[in-house]
Length: 638
Ligand SMILES: Nc1ncnc2c1ncn2[C@@H]1O[C@H](COP(=O)(O)OP(=O)(O)OP(=O)(O)O)[C@@H](O)[C@H]1O
Image (cartoon, rainbow, N blue to C red; front, side, top):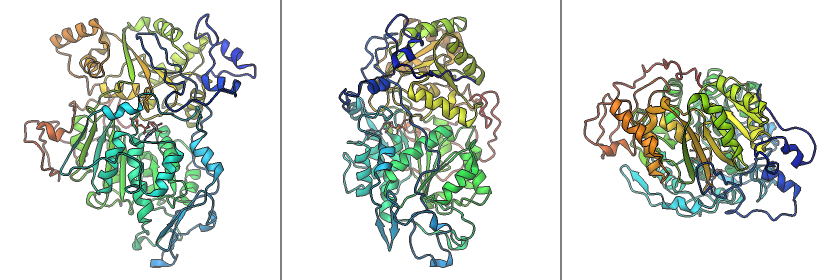
């Protein structure tokens, strides 16, 4: 299978000389490996880390000084020291007992805290863990903030709903718990991003939230910070009496559940959760399909207060009686629009409505994404109560940190144009998106046959193949990765300087997420799209995005938009690719744009607009999993 790593133990220059990426130019060596050669070099500063020398003159002048990642591995369970749940009250309360395998974890294992006698007892520092979780200051394997980080503050924020909120402009106590602040400092975050500034007070006010902010602008912290801060302060909730505690059955009762669509993403979120839960009583766990369930069960037994999960594996563990959702206080849907579209909605309904999760009134529900189509906003009301809608910038907009280039390329010319584009790319990691798994394999093989070290990631690869592909990509061993949509959302890989849409998606929101793998945390990046007549359905959406992000719009593209509109296919391209629930675009909270909705529902926002929009007929429980072709539950396009 495709995984053309650069092997061998020769000098770095010669290792990379064979890659031929830069034609006759000096051999490419990923910057992080150059650092290994030049240990004396001073560490990069936060805003000048060598990965964000912004591109200046598109197209094709890819001037980012990007670098390879490093050997950052996903933490699929198995941490040292063990971590049983943090509840440390008398075992015999309510007859249950919370310590099925209490001996698993030394009570005072460094790095892990506990809750004792109604108080939070922070664990001792553990330098080994700190190094693993936070890396070194100049660690090229970690994402560093880029030159444009402060510019996030210029993006207009809109908060709609029945309450106003003062943003939290700095990381301080109050409102945040001191232990969380210590961990935020260890993570080297100095200022909250806009989405974090608002999510902190909104969640603290016990409100449900639908939050929309651009890719790479810190949404993960946006939900982790307020949840962890409150958890550290309030402490754990004992299992319900009726369940009898952990005792015999070793069932876990998480209080926070984060659902996300892919294995890689849940692992990444879990890594972040571990960072910020360090030394606290909160034990984190991650479960996802395709990996050994017994290892995940062991991990859950060690403690599972904050659980990050893909829906399918979670359902499996609930069915096995190993996880109960009865204690959930916080439910987070990350990439919420993806989680509620045709592929996942039935599973989400089962988890949220068909198991023992507290009702919408007895939990807080938070949804985050960079895109929220109107139909999904309407569907989401089934899971939220009188929510606040937070948008940083226009819903579904792209970051100006990404320089977008659109090239007209007929299908038959794509391969040779790709070689040209890669040859003129500056060093850095390049992510290439294609529409099918077969194409992902074929294209990575083609690249390797042309001496370009590439790997592929898609849904047909085994878990270990996927992990290896990501690892070799991060480290720059294969600085090119060909991917299907499975890698489109959420992944935060440092030094991805170039995203190429070899095949454009049929949904403009998918384009937004794909190109969002570059230009993160204030860094800059380039996104190149190969456009041709087959992509007419997204031309209007694409032009809107380009205009909004102050990008150059090729005249030929506007010409196609004009002729497409005339020919009737120029709608803002949604709904083609994944089963085709006709999706309406939304640039903001749909309640603000006069959109009513059919069907029942308990939604009662005072600001809800009057009728007018009849919308898709029904999104009730009967919504099947019938997405054909590209979509549905089978995820066959991944
Ligand atoms: N306050 C902060 N200060 C510095 N860096 C931050 C801050 N918040 C988040 N980051 C970093 O920014 C990067 C992007 O954050 P994150 O992955 O949460 O983005 P996102 O908005 O969820 O993106 P996506 O829409 O692609 O899922 C991460 O590397 C994260 O560590």
